[in-house]
Length: 392
Ligand SMILES: Nc1nc2c(ncn2[C@@H]2O[C@H](COP(=O)(O)OP(=O)(O)OP(=O)(O)O)[C@@H](O)[C@H]2O)c(=O)[nH]1
Ligand SMILES: [Mg+2]
Image (cartoon, rainbow, N blue to C red; front, side, top):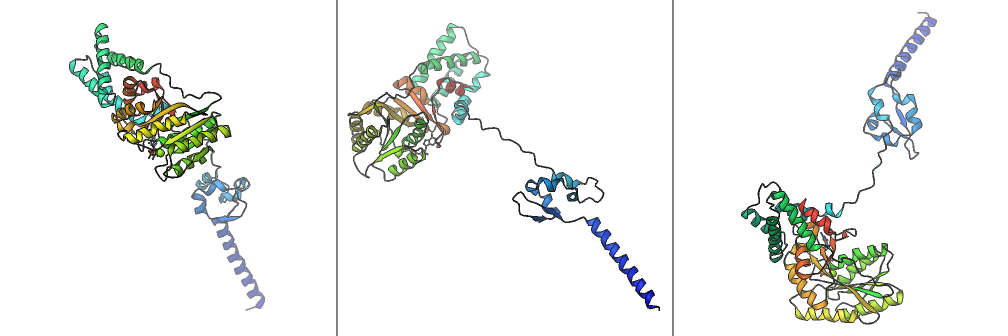
């Protein structure tokens, strides 16, 4: 064969193979070279894109039609994943109200009372059930009986026998029972106020001081914590952690030292550092240990020495201990003239009724309520919202 002819055939075959290769490359589409936001170039294959890595793609690359990979510009299903992600702005979290946060106490108590709403007529048995519901919710036997007796005579007076109306009367009566109490926490101007925290073991004294430290600072006060629990090794450490967290001053003594002198030192330090409230922690103690109750009386006397000015003695009670809280309240009130109650752990209790027992039988106002372990979980007691929550 003519060598020229052979060369021509070879060129024709070469051109034909090259054409087929070119067409097949076009059909597959180019590899997607995508630019992540960080700036480094990354070559992503189509699988990667489909997994949703689109959020990091550069706008310029997204606008490039070559990225489509579709030969004739028609839309294929891969295009959708290259859309810019929609930015959904989270609304700021709404702080739940006292009413909402009562949680368990609320649902359990209204469980006892809720059944009455559907009742047609309240007969003798229903009156008894109602009284029992109050007792079970820790309102206390004496207070429950007194409340029901009052409501029953009022219902008779008004010829009211319908369940819903009777509940309304009870609600009103309970509201009246705890209305008009002074629940403010006293801070006297120009004084070194001392707030003493007392109560049995593990009720939440130290935690309450920690929570209050933050809150008082936010309100513009200058609190100082005094670690008067010298009994338990870790107690001062625990308070120190809270002080650091809420940026409060703290005075602590030696383990096994005299609690009165630690608190006295705290008051001296507060006066010289211009702190206006001393939050004085004390060791948990059982109310039946008379030597420990005497020690508490001494702490109270020493704290009142110049320049100390005891403006609150707050008894911390754990809502989950129920009626035993009443016994504690009586004995502590005798030893240290309690000015208010902090009712902790109401988030985990169905026994909110203890509030009525404390206020009506002992006349001590509930001033603060603990609804959790966090720094934000200490709230002022709101009697109206509390009653609404119980009857919801
Ligand atoms: N759920 C819940 N837990 C709380 C509340 N207040 C305190 N606690 C927890 O109860 C436990 C005991 O709290 P402390 O503050 O150490 O109690 P305390 O009275 O100082 O205890 P002692 O110093 O041992 O007498 C801790 O685990 C707290 O986090 C509250 O309102 N709700
Ligand atoms: Mg403690």
